[in-house]
Amino acid sequence: MTAYDPDNIFAKLLRGEIPNHTLYEDDRTLAFLDIMPIVDGHSLVIPKKPARNIFDVEPDELAYLAQIAQKVSLAACKAFGADGHTLRLHSEVSGGQEVPHVHFHLLPMKTGVPVRPRAMADHAVLAQHAAKIRALL
Image 1 (cartoon, rainbow, N blue to C red):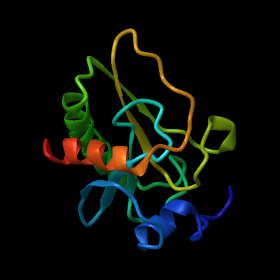
Image 2 (image 1 turned 90 degrees about the horizontal axis):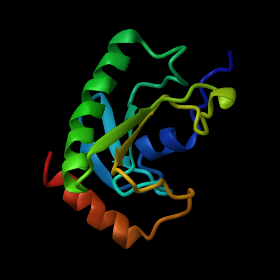
Image 3 (image 1 turned 90 degrees about the vertical axis):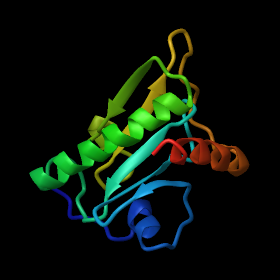
Image 4 (image 1 turned 135 degrees about the vertical axis):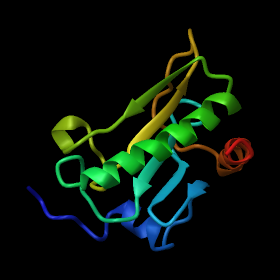
């Protein structure tokens, strides 16, 4: 298995080298909006402790990450009037993982509304979306 890369984009984000639209933060986790959302409210939750994926994250960290994912998901679904939700965790490139830092994708879903292709979002729109979710946390 490949070693953790401390220069991956999420590690840089955690060090404050890359800006983000933060939704929630505590001493163990950070939740923020995906900058290439496939649905409104598409969020990510990451641990602050380095771990590549499900294969090397500590079980208690994964459990805590899931608790925060649930909290943020509930707020995002309410903020965007979602009637469903998808939670994704990809591990390794073959499993669809693009950033080698364990993370959940939180996707508020609406019946009949398809996901969009991944494309860079307008940061002003993301700021508005983040404010809607933060107001419910």
